[in-house]
Image 1 (tube, protein in one colour):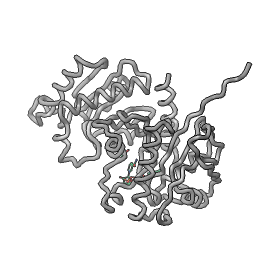
Image 2 (cartoon, helix red, strand yellow; image 1 turned 90 degrees about the vertical axis):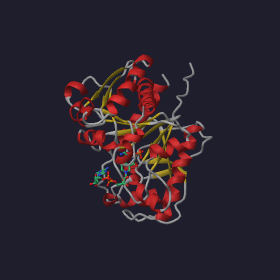
Image 3 (cartoon, protein in one colour; image 1 turned 120 degrees about the horizontal axis):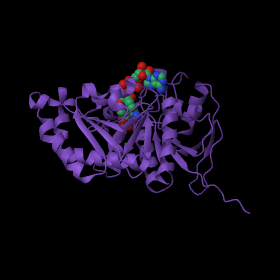
Image 4 (cartoon, protein in one colour; image 1 turned 30 degrees about the horizontal axis):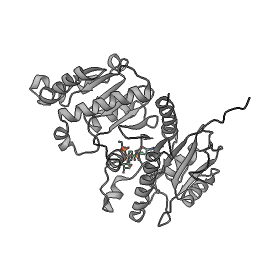
Length: 335
Ligand SMILES: NC(=O)C1=CN([C@@H]2O[C@H](COP(=O)(O)OP(=O)(O)OC[C@H]3O[C@@H](n4cnc5c(N)ncnc54)[C@H](O)[C@@H]3O)[C@@H](O)[C@H]2O)C=CC1
Ligand SMILES: NCC(=O)COP(=O)(O)O
């Protein structure tokens, strides 16, 4: 009997800010065997120089979309070549390399959309240097949503203990109440429920929802958003989607075992309501997932850590987790 050839998948990785730890943690993650082909969209010299600086072996093989995908050996990566205009010094941001950062992300996203790649894994980007160079950039989530014309996407971070999703992402705190509407909440929670079903095998998601104000508004005496927006949105959703919605509950007491143990995800109203708790429970051990894009995208839970770049001391755990979770998600979604 002829054995059927196993079809391997390709995952595309962007290393983010070249002077940050993105290249380091990708090279570190490549030291183990993966069941997929890892294609890095980056400058080959950046990776080879960084590998030398952190004293790790690295062999690059050229990526060709027409070639059959095959897993890389430990210490090996496929390279989708993009060129940096200026050589990078670890830890030193350079505005002249901004377009490179955006181009790698755009190319990788296009490759996911056209079926070249099964998922996108991103390394950390430095948002301020991009903005300093007049590229309005608040995060991968917003950028990928915009270039893929997605009106709503959801940022969800996950570790072994907890999943936290956000109703709003990288916006000033003053804008948060304006951005939370009945529609935005209905869209966010619907995408969250669909994502949990499609990628994580949760057939009837239990979603716990934070209030916006202290004590969830204290019956309207400390803010009206719970009464005017959150509760009506949950009432609409309860009639329309197959999941359990619990809340709004006070954000200061929702993150306790009796709720967390039953929750498939906790929806926080804003970035720093949910992420400090998630990161306290496992910084460097969590993965950031964008739900609602036309493809799978995962990322690290940390930033560019410029001071560790090129030293070999950055921890690759979150990058390893981001790749692992992307592989699990694509396996689940194709079941
Ligand atoms: N996925 C992304 O693109 C993200 C990008 N950022 C960006 O990163 C830049 C720097 O942000 P910060 O707030 O300084 O956060 P950061 O995560 O870069 O650093 C915070 C602290 O954690 C440490 N740290 C971070 N990653 C580590 C790792 N893998 N191993 C060991 N230690 C690690 C750093 O040394 C520092 O002490 C900002 O421009 C921010 O916007 C931040 C979070 C995510
Ligand atoms: N705090 C999360 C973060 O900054 C990463 O966001 P994104 O770049 O994945 O949108």
